[in-house]
Length: 343
Image (cartoon, rainbow, N blue to C red; front, side):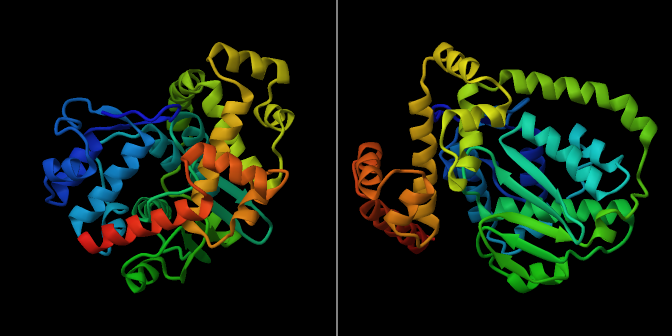
């Protein structure tokens, strides 16, 4: 399997075998379309790069040929699979705490995160990838359906979000709006917002005794995952959030990661890389995301990435891709159109 450098990996195995079997899809066909080995899901499964994981989701979506695939996936009762983070969420007193527990686990263990923003008038749950600014819509929609379904199951109440946002269009928007009970908008994130009353609605599944017995083991797993994550990966994850706000300096990242500037540089040196290499890598990822998914021009992208002037961005982008920003954007557009035509 190809392995993209400096990317986090994602484990795939039993859950994917179950989902493919439940939906009557050919494991071989899905893996072949994604360009992955036929035995990838055998046994305990394998770890694959984030690019490969995205390709797997896109292949899954293409093979299923179902406009409401996320609605089906997000409501699967996978009792055959024990997920410690989901168990921790089910034992929580309400959705706010459940989201925070899931978010803490995801933030340290996997390539994705769940952020819970509590305000007096609303609580927002945002699902995102820590290492890439883009996300397959079918995956994002599945996650939001899963979370809202968890809320409804735990409260035994058909909670209706105030709003839902996805990072792209779904094929049957009416079906999704009917299931969520509210409009589904498009934006830069995958998120849903609850009224304060619903965010704090008591879970009938709350079990403090089970949670206290289970918590130490879960936290050990989280700490092991955090220790295994390279400093480069942690810095790139932080930069994807900091760059759009204009915080591009090494001291900004050191504060975000709660380490000293000297420790950060020393860890990077031990990993055989430098601050400038990591900064350029994060800038390249964000630049490609903006050019591929927005209508921002090159000068606007340059500003968001913290370059001193557009010419500096042009030179850097050509160095990264051997193309100008607009030429790269057009090539991506042509490739997407060709792929849609083949389908």
